Amino acid sequence: MRPVLGIESSCDETASAVLDGEGRVLAEAVLSQEREHAPYGGVVPEIAARAHLAILPDQVHRVMACAGLGFGELGGVAASAGPGLIGGLMVGSQFAKGIAIAHGLPFIAVNHLEAHALTARLPGLVEHGVAFPYLLLLLSGGHCQCVAVEGVGQHVRLGSTMDDAVGEAFDKVAKLLGLGWPGGPALERLAAGGDPRRYTFPRPLLGRPGCGFSFSGLKTAVAHEVARQGAGALSMRVAADIAASFQCAVTDVLVDRAAHAMAMMRERAPDAQLLVVAGGVAANGAIRGALADVADQHGFELIAPPVRLCTDNAIMVAWTGIERLRLGLADGLDVAPRPRWPL
Ligand code: KG4
Ligand code: ZN
Image (cartoon, rainbow, N blue to C red; front, side, top):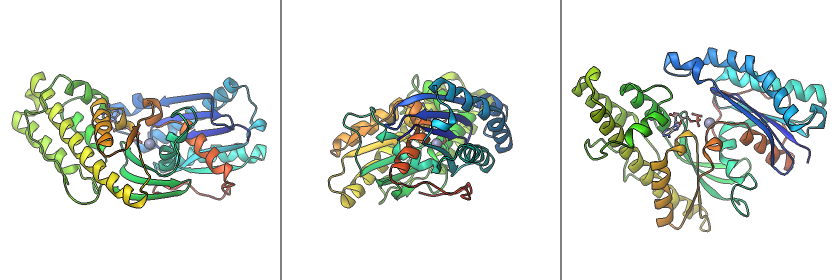
Protein backbone atom coordinates (compact mmCIF):
# COMPACT_ATOMS: atom_id res chain seq x y z
CA MET A 1 0.00 0.00 0.00
CA ARG A 2 1.14 3.54 -0.72
CA PRO A 3 1.69 6.03 2.16
CA VAL A 4 -1.30 7.50 3.99
CA LEU A 5 -1.69 11.04 5.32
CA GLY A 6 -3.53 11.45 8.63
CA ILE A 7 -5.04 14.65 10.07
CA GLU A 8 -6.16 15.23 13.67
CA SER A 9 -8.20 18.29 14.67
CA SER A 10 -10.92 17.01 17.00
CA CYS A 11 -9.92 19.08 20.05
CA ASP A 12 -6.98 21.38 20.69
CA GLU A 13 -4.13 19.55 18.98
CA THR A 14 -3.51 20.29 15.31
CA ALA A 15 -1.62 17.29 13.96
CA SER A 16 -0.57 15.73 10.66
CA ALA A 17 1.39 12.56 9.92
CA VAL A 18 2.43 10.46 6.94
CA LEU A 19 2.95 6.72 7.44
CA ASP A 20 4.19 4.29 4.81
CA GLY A 21 2.00 1.34 3.85
CA GLU A 22 3.52 -0.78 6.63
CA GLY A 23 2.74 1.84 9.27
CA ARG A 24 6.24 3.29 9.66
CA VAL A 25 6.19 7.01 10.47
CA LEU A 26 7.72 9.00 7.60
CA ALA A 27 6.95 12.43 9.09
CA GLU A 28 4.68 13.95 11.72
CA ALA A 29 3.85 17.20 13.48
CA VAL A 30 1.71 18.03 16.52
CA LEU A 31 0.97 21.57 17.59
CA SER A 32 -0.86 21.96 20.87
CA GLN A 33 -3.02 25.07 21.11
CA GLU A 34 -2.43 25.27 24.88
CA ARG A 35 -1.27 28.88 24.66
CA GLU A 36 -4.44 29.99 22.83
CA HIS A 37 -6.79 28.37 25.37
CA ALA A 38 -4.87 28.76 28.64
CA PRO A 39 -6.22 32.28 29.41
CA TYR A 40 -9.74 30.78 29.41
CA GLY A 41 -8.88 27.76 31.58
CA GLY A 42 -10.10 25.28 28.97
CA VAL A 43 -10.65 24.70 25.26
CA VAL A 44 -12.78 27.38 23.54
CA PRO A 45 -14.35 25.62 20.51
CA GLU A 46 -14.43 28.66 18.20
CA ILE A 47 -10.80 29.57 18.96
CA ALA A 48 -9.82 25.93 18.36
CA ALA A 49 -11.53 25.79 14.96
CA ARG A 50 -9.89 29.03 13.81
CA ALA A 51 -6.48 27.89 15.04
CA HIS A 52 -6.80 24.56 13.16
CA LEU A 53 -7.65 26.53 10.02
CA ALA A 54 -4.64 28.80 10.47
CA ILE A 55 -2.17 26.01 11.26
CA LEU A 56 -3.21 23.02 9.17
CA PRO A 57 -2.36 23.98 5.55
CA ASP A 58 1.28 24.86 6.30
CA GLN A 59 1.66 21.96 8.68
CA VAL A 60 0.43 19.41 6.12
CA HIS A 61 2.72 20.82 3.42
CA ARG A 62 5.69 20.69 5.79
CA VAL A 63 4.94 17.11 6.81
CA MET A 64 4.60 16.02 3.17
CA ALA A 65 7.88 17.78 2.28
CA CYS A 66 9.59 16.14 5.23
CA ALA A 67 8.34 12.74 4.04
CA GLY A 68 9.65 13.63 0.55
CA LEU A 69 6.26 12.96 -1.04
CA GLY A 70 3.84 14.69 -3.35
CA PHE A 71 0.09 14.29 -2.69
CA GLY A 72 -0.22 12.19 -5.86
CA GLU A 73 2.03 9.54 -4.33
CA LEU A 74 -0.33 8.92 -1.41
CA GLY A 75 -2.62 5.92 -1.13
CA GLY A 76 -5.26 7.76 0.90
CA VAL A 77 -6.09 10.63 3.23
CA ALA A 78 -7.55 9.99 6.70
CA ALA A 79 -8.98 12.58 9.08
CA SER A 80 -10.63 12.43 12.50
CA ALA A 81 -14.32 12.93 11.75
CA GLY A 82 -15.65 12.58 15.31
CA PRO A 83 -16.32 12.57 18.16
CA GLY A 84 -15.05 16.03 19.10
CA LEU A 85 -15.59 19.73 18.61
CA ILE A 86 -17.52 20.18 15.38
CA GLY A 87 -15.63 23.26 14.13
CA GLY A 88 -12.25 21.56 14.29
CA LEU A 89 -13.62 18.31 12.86
CA MET A 90 -15.03 20.24 9.90
CA VAL A 91 -11.71 21.97 9.25
CA GLY A 92 -9.71 18.71 9.32
CA SER A 93 -12.10 16.57 7.34
CA GLN A 94 -12.84 19.22 4.71
CA PHE A 95 -9.13 19.76 4.25
CA ALA A 96 -8.59 16.00 3.84
CA LYS A 97 -11.50 15.73 1.40
CA GLY A 98 -10.05 18.59 -0.65
CA ILE A 99 -6.76 16.73 -1.04
CA ALA A 100 -8.63 13.51 -1.83
CA ILE A 101 -10.71 15.19 -4.56
CA ALA A 102 -7.76 17.06 -6.08
CA HIS A 103 -5.61 13.93 -6.34
CA GLY A 104 -8.23 11.21 -6.81
CA LEU A 105 -7.44 9.52 -3.48
CA PRO A 106 -9.61 7.51 -1.11
CA PHE A 107 -10.84 9.42 1.96
CA ILE A 108 -11.19 7.73 5.35
CA ALA A 109 -13.41 9.32 8.02
CA VAL A 110 -11.73 8.14 11.21
CA ASN A 111 -13.48 7.70 14.54
CA HIS A 112 -11.06 9.41 16.94
CA LEU A 113 -11.79 6.81 19.64
CA GLU A 114 -11.02 3.96 17.25
CA ALA A 115 -7.75 5.72 16.43
CA HIS A 116 -6.81 5.68 20.14
CA ALA A 117 -7.92 2.03 20.27
CA LEU A 118 -5.81 0.92 17.29
CA THR A 119 -2.64 2.80 18.33
CA ALA A 120 -1.43 -0.30 20.16
CA ARG A 121 -1.30 -2.15 16.83
CA LEU A 122 1.22 0.26 15.30
CA PRO A 123 4.08 -1.85 14.00
CA GLY A 124 7.18 -1.73 16.16
CA LEU A 125 5.36 -0.68 19.30
CA VAL A 126 5.01 -4.15 20.75
CA GLU A 127 7.07 -7.12 19.66
CA HIS A 128 5.09 -9.35 17.25
CA GLY A 129 2.26 -6.76 17.25
CA VAL A 130 -0.96 -6.63 19.22
CA ALA A 131 -3.60 -9.05 17.92
CA PHE A 132 -7.37 -8.74 18.44
CA PRO A 133 -9.11 -9.03 20.81
CA TYR A 134 -7.77 -6.80 23.59
CA LEU A 135 -9.13 -4.61 26.34
CA LEU A 136 -8.75 -0.85 25.99
CA LEU A 137 -8.91 1.62 28.84
CA LEU A 138 -9.37 5.05 27.29
CA LEU A 139 -8.49 7.74 29.81
CA SER A 140 -8.52 11.22 28.30
CA GLY A 141 -9.86 14.69 28.93
CA GLY A 142 -13.04 13.99 26.99
CA HIS A 143 -13.49 10.23 27.35
CA CYS A 144 -13.30 7.59 30.02
CA GLN A 145 -14.31 4.10 28.98
CA CYS A 146 -13.45 0.39 28.87
CA VAL A 147 -13.74 -1.12 25.42
CA ALA A 148 -13.39 -4.66 24.09
CA VAL A 149 -11.51 -4.13 20.82
CA GLU A 150 -12.42 -7.15 18.70
CA GLY A 151 -11.42 -5.96 15.24
CA VAL A 152 -11.31 -2.92 12.97
CA GLY A 153 -14.75 -1.34 13.37
CA GLN A 154 -15.67 -3.98 15.94
CA HIS A 155 -15.73 -2.49 19.41
CA VAL A 156 -17.91 -3.21 22.40
CA ARG A 157 -18.14 -0.58 25.10
CA LEU A 158 -18.05 -2.43 28.42
CA GLY A 159 -18.42 0.67 30.58
CA SER A 160 -17.98 4.41 30.50
CA THR A 161 -18.27 7.45 32.74
CA MET A 162 -21.68 8.67 33.78
CA ASP A 163 -20.43 12.23 34.34
CA ASP A 164 -16.90 13.63 34.05
CA ALA A 165 -14.04 12.06 32.15
CA VAL A 166 -11.02 11.28 34.31
CA GLY A 167 -8.81 13.91 32.62
CA GLU A 168 -11.57 16.46 33.16
CA ALA A 169 -11.51 15.62 36.88
CA PHE A 170 -7.73 16.16 36.94
CA ASP A 171 -8.16 19.50 35.15
CA LYS A 172 -10.94 20.69 37.49
CA VAL A 173 -9.07 19.73 40.66
CA ALA A 174 -5.90 21.36 39.30
CA LYS A 175 -7.90 24.53 38.78
CA LEU A 176 -9.17 24.40 42.38
CA LEU A 177 -5.55 24.13 43.51
CA GLY A 178 -4.56 27.14 41.43
CA LEU A 179 -2.53 25.17 38.91
CA GLY A 180 -2.54 26.11 35.22
CA TRP A 181 -4.42 24.39 32.41
CA PRO A 182 -4.23 21.61 31.34
CA GLY A 183 -3.85 20.54 34.93
CA GLY A 184 -3.06 16.82 34.79
CA PRO A 185 0.72 17.04 34.43
CA ALA A 186 1.03 19.88 37.01
CA LEU A 187 -1.18 17.99 39.45
CA GLU A 188 0.95 14.86 39.08
CA ARG A 189 4.11 16.89 39.82
CA LEU A 190 2.51 18.48 42.90
CA ALA A 191 1.20 15.11 44.12
CA ALA A 192 4.69 13.61 43.99
CA GLY A 193 5.63 15.62 47.11
CA GLY A 194 2.35 15.10 48.97
CA ASP A 195 0.88 12.61 51.44
CA PRO A 196 -1.79 10.49 49.72
CA ARG A 197 -3.25 9.39 53.08
CA ARG A 198 -3.84 12.83 54.57
CA TYR A 199 -7.34 13.24 53.11
CA THR A 200 -9.79 10.41 52.55
CA PHE A 201 -11.70 11.34 49.41
CA PRO A 202 -14.57 9.18 48.08
CA ARG A 203 -13.84 6.39 45.60
CA PRO A 204 -17.02 6.47 43.45
CA LEU A 205 -18.38 3.08 42.29
CA LEU A 206 -15.54 1.17 43.95
CA GLY A 207 -16.51 -2.49 44.16
CA ARG A 208 -19.73 -2.02 42.20
CA PRO A 209 -20.51 -4.47 39.40
CA GLY A 210 -19.50 -3.52 35.87
CA CYS A 211 -16.84 -1.07 34.82
CA GLY A 212 -18.58 2.29 34.69
CA PHE A 213 -16.97 5.40 36.16
CA SER A 214 -18.07 8.51 38.01
CA PHE A 215 -15.81 11.37 39.03
CA SER A 216 -18.05 14.32 39.79
CA GLY A 217 -18.59 13.36 43.48
CA LEU A 218 -14.85 13.05 44.01
CA LYS A 219 -14.27 16.43 42.41
CA THR A 220 -16.96 17.98 44.63
CA ALA A 221 -15.38 16.44 47.75
CA VAL A 222 -12.05 18.03 46.81
CA ALA A 223 -13.82 21.37 46.21
CA HIS A 224 -15.36 21.17 49.72
CA GLU A 225 -11.96 20.44 51.27
CA VAL A 226 -10.37 23.36 49.41
CA ALA A 227 -13.21 25.64 50.55
CA ARG A 228 -12.84 24.39 54.15
CA GLN A 229 -9.16 25.30 54.05
CA GLY A 230 -10.01 28.78 52.70
CA ALA A 231 -9.22 28.67 48.98
CA GLY A 232 -6.80 31.61 48.83
CA ALA A 233 -4.88 30.39 51.85
CA LEU A 234 -3.76 26.92 50.73
CA SER A 235 -0.22 26.26 51.83
CA MET A 236 2.05 24.33 49.44
CA ARG A 237 2.00 21.46 51.95
CA VAL A 238 -1.81 21.25 52.02
CA ALA A 239 -2.11 21.66 48.24
CA ALA A 240 0.40 18.84 47.69
CA ASP A 241 -1.43 16.58 50.18
CA ILE A 242 -4.79 17.28 48.51
CA ALA A 243 -3.28 16.58 45.08
CA ALA A 244 -1.71 13.32 46.29
CA SER A 245 -4.92 12.22 48.07
CA PHE A 246 -7.00 12.99 44.96
CA GLN A 247 -4.61 11.13 42.65
CA CYS A 248 -4.65 8.19 45.05
CA ALA A 249 -8.48 8.08 45.00
CA VAL A 250 -8.53 8.20 41.18
CA THR A 251 -5.91 5.47 41.00
CA ASP A 252 -7.88 3.20 43.37
CA VAL A 253 -11.01 3.71 41.25
CA LEU A 254 -9.21 3.02 37.96
CA VAL A 255 -7.57 -0.12 39.38
CA ASP A 256 -10.94 -1.43 40.62
CA ARG A 257 -12.73 -0.64 37.35
CA ALA A 258 -9.90 -2.16 35.30
CA ALA A 259 -10.12 -5.35 37.40
CA HIS A 260 -13.84 -5.61 36.68
CA ALA A 261 -13.26 -4.86 32.99
CA MET A 262 -10.62 -7.61 32.74
CA ALA A 263 -13.06 -10.11 34.26
CA MET A 264 -15.75 -9.02 31.78
CA MET A 265 -13.25 -9.27 28.92
CA ARG A 266 -12.29 -12.80 29.97
CA GLU A 267 -15.94 -13.81 29.79
CA ARG A 268 -16.22 -12.52 26.23
CA ALA A 269 -12.80 -13.78 25.11
CA PRO A 270 -11.14 -16.34 27.41
CA ASP A 271 -7.78 -15.94 25.60
CA ALA A 272 -7.63 -12.16 25.94
CA GLN A 273 -4.51 -11.09 27.80
CA LEU A 274 -3.69 -7.54 26.85
CA LEU A 275 -4.83 -4.40 28.63
CA VAL A 276 -4.03 -1.32 26.53
CA VAL A 277 -4.20 2.20 27.97
CA ALA A 278 -4.65 5.32 25.87
CA GLY A 279 -5.51 8.98 26.37
CA GLY A 280 -3.61 11.78 28.10
CA VAL A 281 -4.16 10.44 31.64
CA ALA A 282 -2.23 7.31 30.65
CA ALA A 283 0.82 9.59 30.85
CA ASN A 284 0.45 9.60 34.65
CA GLY A 285 3.23 7.50 36.16
CA ALA A 286 1.37 6.52 39.33
CA ILE A 287 -1.67 5.39 37.33
CA ARG A 288 0.43 3.46 34.81
CA GLY A 289 2.29 1.70 37.61
CA ALA A 290 -0.90 0.71 39.45
CA LEU A 291 -2.55 -0.52 36.23
CA ALA A 292 0.53 -2.60 35.40
CA ASP A 293 0.25 -4.27 38.82
CA VAL A 294 -3.48 -5.01 38.60
CA ALA A 295 -3.07 -6.31 35.03
CA ASP A 296 -0.37 -8.65 36.27
CA GLN A 297 -2.59 -9.91 39.10
CA HIS A 298 -5.28 -10.80 36.55
CA GLY A 299 -2.95 -12.51 34.10
CA PHE A 300 -3.03 -9.58 31.68
CA GLU A 301 -0.12 -7.59 30.31
CA LEU A 302 -0.35 -3.81 30.32
CA ILE A 303 0.52 -2.14 27.03
CA ALA A 304 1.10 1.57 27.56
CA PRO A 305 2.19 3.30 24.35
CA PRO A 306 4.72 6.14 24.69
CA VAL A 307 3.14 9.32 26.01
CA ARG A 308 3.23 11.13 22.64
CA LEU A 309 1.07 8.32 21.20
CA CYS A 310 -1.31 8.35 24.20
CA THR A 311 -2.20 12.02 23.76
CA ASP A 312 -3.89 13.27 20.60
CA ASN A 313 -1.75 12.86 17.49
CA ALA A 314 -2.13 12.17 13.76
CA ILE A 315 -0.02 9.01 13.67
CA MET A 316 -2.96 7.10 15.16
CA VAL A 317 -5.31 8.65 12.57
CA ALA A 318 -3.10 7.71 9.61
CA TRP A 319 -2.64 4.22 11.07
CA THR A 320 -6.41 3.75 11.41
CA GLY A 321 -6.66 4.88 7.78
CA ILE A 322 -4.20 2.14 6.81
CA GLU A 323 -6.05 -0.52 8.84
CA ARG A 324 -9.34 0.47 7.21
CA LEU A 325 -7.94 0.77 3.67
CA ARG A 326 -6.46 -2.73 4.00
CA LEU A 327 -10.03 -3.95 4.52
CA GLY A 328 -11.40 -1.81 1.68
CA LEU A 329 -13.20 0.48 4.11
CA ALA A 330 -12.84 3.90 2.44
CA ASP A 331 -15.61 6.47 2.93
CA GLY A 332 -17.64 8.58 0.53
CA LEU A 333 -16.98 12.31 0.34
CA ASP A 334 -20.51 12.89 1.59
CA VAL A 335 -19.66 11.55 5.08
CA ALA A 336 -20.20 14.42 7.52
CA PRO A 337 -18.14 14.94 10.68
CA ARG A 338 -20.01 14.11 13.87
CA PRO A 339 -19.56 15.74 17.29
CA ARG A 340 -20.97 12.57 18.91
CA TRP A 341 -19.85 9.25 17.51
CA PRO A 342 -19.77 6.49 20.11
CA LEU A 343 -17.70 3.41 19.37
O1 KG4 B 1 -5.97 12.46 25.25
P1 KG4 B 1 -5.74 13.90 25.55
O2 KG4 B 1 -4.45 14.53 25.09
O3 KG4 B 1 -6.86 14.80 24.94
C1 KG4 B 1 -8.21 14.48 24.98
O4 KG4 B 1 -8.82 14.80 26.00
O5 KG4 B 1 -8.69 13.90 23.98
O6 KG4 B 1 -5.90 14.05 27.13
C2 KG4 B 1 -5.75 15.28 27.79
C3 KG4 B 1 -6.08 15.07 29.25
C4 KG4 B 1 -6.17 16.36 30.02
O7 KG4 B 1 -7.33 16.32 30.82
C5 KG4 B 1 -4.90 16.34 30.88
O8 KG4 B 1 -5.03 17.04 32.11
C6 KG4 B 1 -4.74 14.86 31.12
O9 KG4 B 1 -5.09 14.26 29.89
N1 KG4 B 1 -3.35 14.52 31.47
C7 KG4 B 1 -2.97 13.99 32.66
C8 KG4 B 1 -1.57 13.89 32.62
N2 KG4 B 1 -1.14 14.33 31.40
C9 KG4 B 1 -2.26 14.72 30.71
N3 KG4 B 1 -3.69 13.63 33.73
C10 KG4 B 1 -3.02 13.12 34.79
N4 KG4 B 1 -1.67 13.00 34.83
C11 KG4 B 1 -0.90 13.36 33.77
N5 KG4 B 1 0.42 13.23 33.83
ZN1 ZN C 1 -8.12 11.86 22.16
